[in-house]
Amino acid sequence: MSNLVTIDPERILAPIDHNLFGGFAEHLGRCIYGGIYEPSSPHADEDGLRRDVLKALKRLGLPVIRYPGGNFVSGYRWRDGVGPSEERQARMDLAWHDLEPNTFGTNEFVGFCRKLGSEPYLAVNCGDGDMREARDWLEYCNGTKDTALVKLRKQHGYQAPHGVKYWGIGNEVDGPWQIGFKTPEEYARAYTEYAKVMKWTDPSIKLLAAAVSLWDKSFVERVQLLMEHAAYTTPFTRQNLIDYIAIHWYVGNNRERGFADNDFASYMAISERFENLLSATEGIIRAMSTALRLKHDIPIAVDEWNVWYRVGNEGKLEEIYNLEDALVVAMHFNAFIRHAKTVKMANIAQIVNVIAPIYTRPDGLVLQTTFYPFEIYRQTCGSAALDVHWSGDTFSTPEFTGLRTLDVSATLDAPAKRLAVYLVNRTETKASETSVELTRGRFAGPAKAFIVNGSDIKAQNTFATPDQVGVREQTLIAAGQSFTITLEPHSFTALVFDLA
Ligand code: AHR
Image (cartoon, rainbow, N blue to C red; front, side):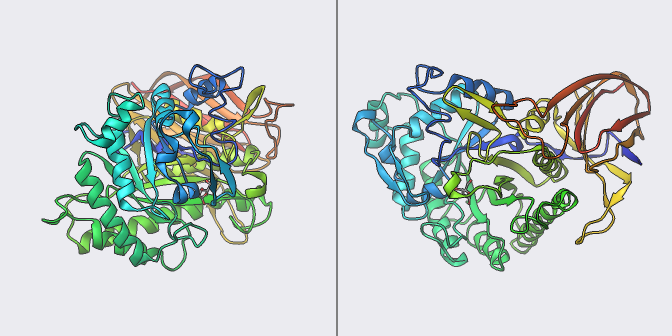
């Protein structure tokens, strides 16, 4: 088994926007209550936030966090979640059929983000809400003039504006499961009107259009109409109204969310699916940009993505991940890096308990398998994506033939002269000898390898056995133009080299 990865550090694909390492927190199950926020816990800080959760989240260094949903937002009234906590009223949440106590809301979320050093990203209700409500929420958060809403924020204890930069209009409006599902035309119209008044309220914000999640035949029309309606400046709107086209997907090792039931090779081939979704979205945005003669780029935000196929609503989406899921998470980051020219934000859904890398109990937490690749990318990813070529061993599945066993991406941190190469070895039983060759420049001494692996592809981290899958760090010697390593079966390896 042998593979060759060829890299020219000057072949830069695009700058990397570190918002690729974003997260998402929804009022759903134990994500907020019992996850992020648990005032009665011995782990709680002065704001009721779980210290142990904050500490684990800091390791992921999330640059941006989307909130409060998800499906939840399509029935949410932001006013229910602000003001003195004892005066807040509980409401029925029809998205997840649960009681929402509203003790955690906008100001608590912004405070949580600030503690993490993350940018808050708020999604407004475009389900059973309206544009007045959305615009008022924005004014409450970001307003600087002496308006009633700004006075209200100050009365609630927040003198300074929150300066929330990212705002999404609606969530998965293309899904019949959504409160306030919309046809492509209905959403394009609603989006434009919401966006108009929101940008008039605060022209500095960045707006995300909730374009696609179902991937049915309306997909092309949805992006097309959104762009036709809102992607350019008119004398009336005075601004381009779309800053990102947002898309969602979830994958799994079953037929519903993947290619086959519990088949490792087919699961590893899932990268073909999200590569395809990215390329298709890039294609339609490019076609429309050409047709509309746009002079600016419209990037993609994958503002919900993850592995999710085992547990549904009844299990409150508390998925326990295994090693093969961690490899799929790593392949997502490889895809985002390879598509760095167009993908400028991505948000793992979600961050705690609900399909998340962190799993809590009242007395502590476990770092799931998927936590580790996320942490490694976040710590080592450079500022530019490189155009890597790789060849070697292949594998086949009932759907595909000749897929490369390695899934690869690479980044460069030019000022630090540091090259990071990310390799997922998709073989179940065989080690893969792999050479990384520079076609320009030289390696300059010790390199680091960070390896995520476990005893077998189904290994999981649980409270009983929290360390079945983790990271091993090795220091290796790299000199000249070629470096060879044996990649373990079913592993993710990040190689970090200094360049001469
Ligand atoms: O992340 C869980 C749910 O998945 C979100 O609420 C929704 O947007 C998606 O369908």
